[in-house]
Image (cartoon, one colour):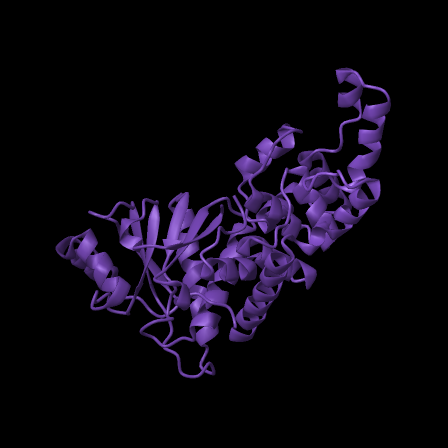
Length: 343
């Protein structure tokens, strides 16, 4: 996954570089800054920082990682929040851009960020996270670097209150419907079809789309060769077709889906590739498929939307409303301790 969100201690991450949100003097006096200095070895890090000659807000400078698992520490200075009218946003964006440029210049394959400026400097947390995601996604549009965003808890990484209230209401409503009816409303048409076929139709009977094939099998058994010839379009085949129909390049699609190039290459090469459910859903979101087509793509991978699953309901909520911001969806999934979209 090119952009990964984790609750973790950044000093313990095994990656090429970690980012330190510091002050212009590299004081190492609090929060993430102090933790990184301690983990790296305060004496070594202090000497290295002294040689850098300070750092202005929006800039980034690099030292070795010393005793840390990472090769490098990239130090950057975020803006103090003064209400938003003193260039705070551009300064914060510059922190991410400069840190990523330094990592790229030193041929880093992976980098981890804390949320810059959102704690001690007072930058509004929600806006700070959105700026981080925006700049990271812009960078990843032309890079294959693995970027990790670390947070201390789900409360520090949350979308707007109104959105969370709407999602929570949607989950409650549809989960209650699922369990009060004993099954999802999505299955009602199937039940109706099979009730017409006779009272002995099993509860797990296939969807109506499969009926012609079943009738053909009952009337005249087909050979294996004939069955394979009539095989339905696979997940990989439908995905590639949809990419072409949307006028996207492969790279545009897999980056938008938060999928790495190696995994997409496997999918393209193997017509029978079976992805994980988060991967299949990520492609449905990246392609901005309406609910019916998203469900069809998911079915090709052997899955279905379930109203018994919080994960499924959250993704369904966004798709039904035509909201395809994958990072925003992952914000909500993260808050509910669900798997994130992507590989």
